[in-house]
Image 1 (cartoon, helix red, strand yellow):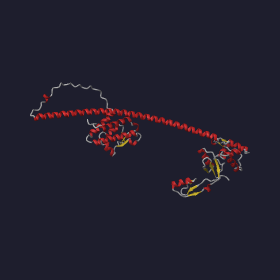
Image 2: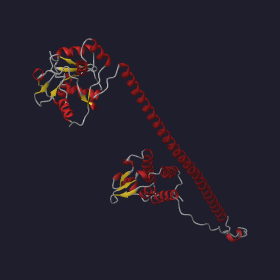
Image 3: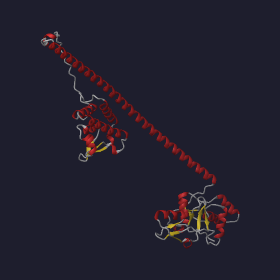
Image 4: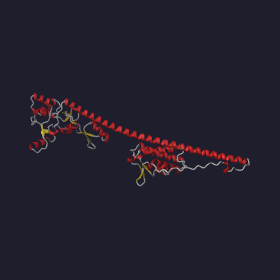
Length: 407
């Protein structure tokens, strides 16, 4: 009895025709096929006509579409497999014989050991080759069964011919093992090379981040020294003002005592000994240097505080909001949502945009107005971590220094 399907001996797949078997072989490199009397399942959906070749496909179709009714057309579509009906084979042979074909026809490669055994049993070389070729070079028993089923074929003793491009050499078990080992070795080397490349990329990234952190730390130390010097200067001025208040208080107490004693007020010209006048030395005129971006940022924050000197809570909230904007860009430079601010946003206007100097400070950090002034946007290429870290240090100093912007 002729087979109704072809079964792959390596994965168990059932195939309707030689064409499907060839496609399966090209996709999976499986070469072990044998005829089967079991027909390929064919369940057709009554609603949409979708054919399903397994119960698994039926279950998936039901789950996806909700269609429940299927018609079993397995017996209607079952046809005997014609192993010699290879696609375009006859056409290629005719074209080769007439000299019009563009492909060279060759004898297919088969297992040499099984070919010798068949020849020793009395089969001709052509018959043995044909049997091994169409039975898939699987087993000796399969080739003998194929000969028994096709003994009456008129061309059974003709040497089969296939296009040279479709002729794949038959590998022995040892050759298959070596081929598999070679492929595994190539995959291993490729994986190792990829890992080395990724490690180099990670090392470059670590070096870059390290440099940025060192630069940020250096700028932070410089700003900290400046902050300490400024605090010391303010403390000295405060101490000087306190001494002046005490002196004035003593003068007032002294005048009050003289008044109570009935003494005339003290003449300021006689009360104090004359002090030789010391000529003040005029400082040398130094060339004026243009203000750096850091100084402009500090002046901008100082101006914001002086314009709103009676609204300390509002000023502090503005500084903290600006620090949040800068911090988000430093932490997520690739996220556009942190680099784009809508100017007419009510929250932004209340916290920063409505205050003198708020937008100017963001522009010093690299933000630019776009879309007719509707947005402030910082392009990715213009993100400068040094400038942003400097801006963050200035904001921290302005928030933590109680004397910032007082003088």
